[in-house]
Amino acid sequence: MTVQRVEGPATAQQEFTIEELSRQVGMSPRNIRAHQARRILAPPVRRGRTVVYQEHHLRRLETILSLQRQGFNLTAIEAMFGVRPGQPRSDTLGPLMQRLAAESPALVDALTRHGVVAWRENGAVQLVRPRALRAALELHRSGLPARQTVQVLVEVLDRIGRPVDELLRATGDRILSLPGDPARPRAATWDEWSDAAELLAQGLIDLLTEAFRVVAENRGPTSVVDIVGRRSGQGTVMLVETAAVLDLG
Image (cartoon, rainbow, N blue to C red; front, side, top):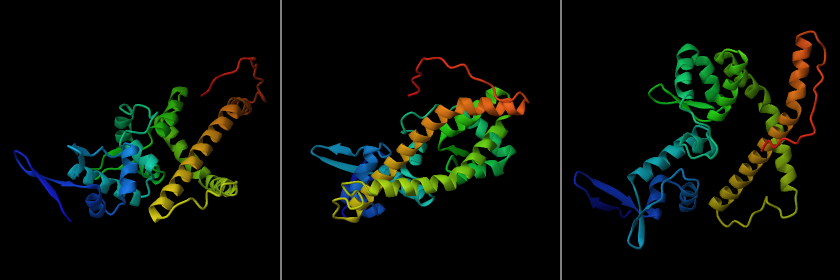
């Protein structure tokens, strides 16, 4: 492998063409460019009319592969690297999760099982999906302890795993039965097949996420009021609905 070196004031830094980087890390050039498009990999350095990759690109790709081997998908990896659009601020969640890790490590382990957080090598907690944690902790405003609301999040994730698997399979089969035959994309290489499968998987995730959100928003208020009414012994509580249409996004 031909490796270029640029002499700096202190140490020489390795530089690679995309083909060299591909061989070094064991990843196709197509996937390397896809990671750049997702912004989890920095763009290459331009040298005149050519572009080169440096050691920090190699280290980042090795990190991405390591996370994928641990079961994290690219959406979760985007959240880890802070490039996933629409992620809430997590500056207040970090200290809270560190306290929770000290007080209830088993609960944090349960969150890692679902890819909500991850353990760093130094024992600190890495936030992966802060949106889920933020939603659980919003319940704290109703007077519930934070640890209990996080426990509820874990219980919900445990409970919906099997139904979601079944829904993913059924919806995937339905999509693959549509005209156009996305099950056989025009792909000549394994990487192209892999990219097509990843696009289909992400589309399924987005579709089911938004569908669940719509159903929960439509049914949630009435269901919760019903539950509160039964628990308080007052029976069904009637809601007064307005004719206004709420834009929930």
